[in-house]
Image 1 (cartoon, rainbow, N blue to C red):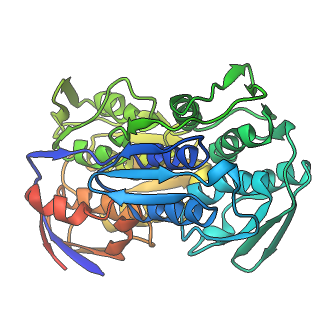
Image 2: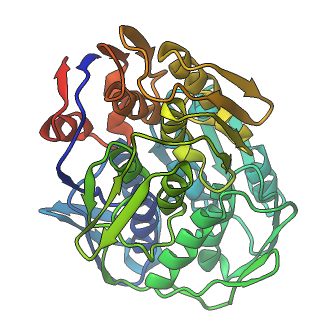
Length: 414
């Protein structure tokens, strides 16, 4: 799909999507619970559908009702062993559920897109050390045997999803410990996992680099609501759009977009009804540590391109193993917008244009939802039409993005 975007500044109000990060975790915890759960969630994406497919294959029943999910776990915890799970292109689904599948007795994942190339070795080694045989053939990754409990050693600087997946699985094997062998990157995502598990009745205790779940811990069915998503809200905030349904006390790391906009020189105003960013026309370059906010880098790069002076983004090397090589795809987007920049070992140095970006360009989304959305927001700052190829990639996290874009004043030919 090609979207030709005619430069228009966006305005108005949009309701935040339910958080994809929380929805994954809530659905998984609910599927493992003792009792039925009801999860309010009025919109969901391809990645969430992948998690629903997979936990359904393990035996849970998911009823998609108006504005909510009803999750009915497998009776007596008798999960399907040897299940075949289609996780599409959702890295979260694969990394969260690999330990869960191992804990219930094995199964295999079918991986789409670039997913088969994304790092899994550290998690697979940890599972192998606990009695699981891991086999990979093409885009199929199989886990054979049943995982034991105890102490799991895992690096914290490859993917926080490894830590989250192990934590969510430990109540199924009598509890245990996850001990980090290197500093934890993207720490707020593990905070989300701990918060989600607490919501469903399981306490996670952290002491230094060790996370502990006590023996006898069990998930309980609950009634809860998925909070608003800061990751996708960042695209609207960078466009000067007011976003409702966000909680400034949320554990989501991408809430940091408010502080980053302020560091660029913008103004962020929040009240009980919503959040809006102002003064986006006169930004200044800054230094940004992306270790805890990797998903925000495409949007930050657009702001940096419109700013005055230089912005350095560092600690972002893990972006090379996302839906695209996100360092390369951000670099390609900046080149199309006419923004001078350099790619470094772990990020980007961006020399802002102090105002308008170049239009009359074509930007390849590289099948990456965050590149497509960042390019769309950048088009609002461009001096000519911007064509985004692979625009359908937004469905991974935000299927209604283009509809909302038009409602907010964007002009698009598809």
